[in-house]
Image 1 (tube, rainbow, N blue to C red):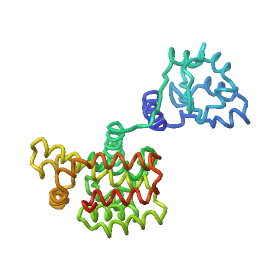
Image 2 (image 1 turned 180 degrees about the vertical axis):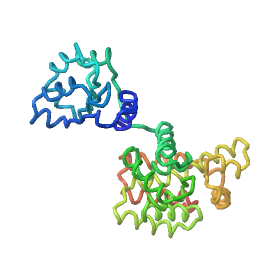
Image 3 (image 1 turned 90 degrees about the vertical axis):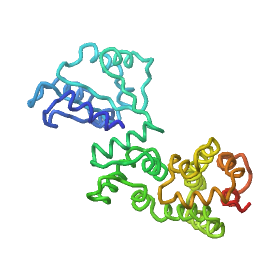
Image 4 (image 1 turned 135 degrees about the horizontal axis):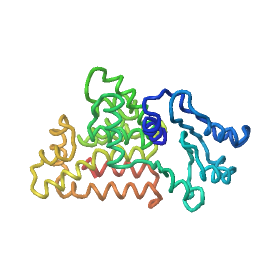
Length: 309
């Protein structure tokens, strides 16, 4: 997110000027090897290519701590032709330096994106960088498999864009094929087996995942991804929405509507209304509410979800 912020700032400051108007320093080198005057002299240098220059200090945490007074003095009369960007991990807003920056510059906080903000970022990145569309459903699946680290998601989007070729859209199936690998495929096979009442096969897939070192919480995440939709569909159906329409509105993939309809009817409404509580209990138990082995917790959940318990 920091790099995206810098990329957004560049054209605002430099316009169409070449990247020779950008100078980057390693903050660790400035703090240990180079005299601080190296930075301040650079800020005063006039660009040969235009009116404005951009000077960036990466990993500037220790540099800021060591030369805070020099930076404060510089900000009393900053260069009009250079913009200084300090990339730090934390920023104490109560310091004189931070207060001065807030007055004459920009205090930009790059937080981890979550929820709808992350989904929007994925869609925007896919479209603007890779010229591909990606549905919210596919975005959520990508996060489920990769996590919320934007750098990793960006790498996976690049792979996906190459994988789909001329196709305009990245589908959940594409993500399963490219991102998940065999563990993801095994997870989907496990969820299908649970849905179809084949608990023996589901337990075998679970064993394969655990033996391969897959974290119990991540396995639960895959189950959550599928059964949250079934729980939502159940709630909609209770409110009067026809079940197939409820499944569609809950985000169940079109190809899975028939099998999901049969599953919920077999499970019965009374048990389906407990899905949310089953998932919550399993999550809390894996986080320490139970002394039961994580394998047994997950096996118990599979029995409940399959309708066999």
